Image (cartoon, rainbow, N blue to C red):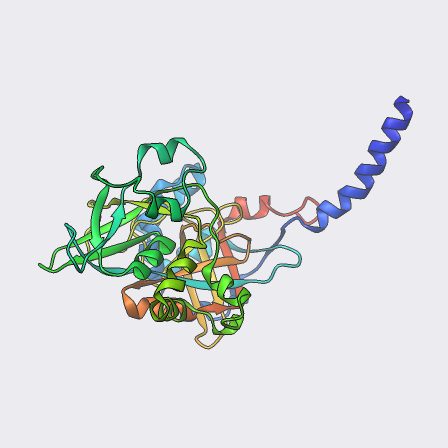
Length: 347
């Protein structure tokens, strides 16, 4: 019997080992000459964004590089001297670049006939019970009423929905004051795309769907539109982010302000937060730029997946909504870390 068990285990190992290996990420070290447009980028700008978060690194090699970066006089030389470009790929998965932005909503510190839709803090029970109530239950059961959980009220439920999708934003009051809100937590339900739901219903083809198209459809169809928003059970709660001036970018996953067109959201399972990343985005508006991985996102999964932070406001939102492009991303890693990622046979 023991020999049968051992034989079975060996057979399982033989069957699963190569299959698992086929899905493991692959690492390739490149030279800086392999990076298209590298010499034409503003390395000084990239270095200043890198300095925003490099002090938060734990590893001694990263910390040492951060100290050197603060004193460097030649940004391009700094990156070329202390880093190696490494391309991380997953078999069968293509690169995808999308964009995100910080919405700016019209709001009020108290409810009025115009400002009727509350931006909520997170109730204690939502932190303890996972998952908690669905979006529909939160908004229709009265569970949030009379508890002082409102940060502000806004005038558009569709823009509030997309504020939740983006995770942070600014709210402008009529007296000119501005507050910033950031992600505090969610109700624990998985995100369900309302864009994909419109495609499933046959309302639009996949190439037609964008945030602007969805917003316009919901506004044209207020009853069906509300039901469409309820399709996404996930609900995001906010906190007021008073420590970040309104002229700075929102806080990213490293709890530091991110920078328009220099910060990206990545999958930290493959790309260390704070690392420089060379982006070669194709499509109608090609982009060749050194960016810094300073944020994450629930939909950003994979070695070649990135979300480019476009900026704040409606124009940034329109640009972000149009971005869905192929290309490649190359992570700049400290030299020893880069070579440590290679298979033994390649070293």
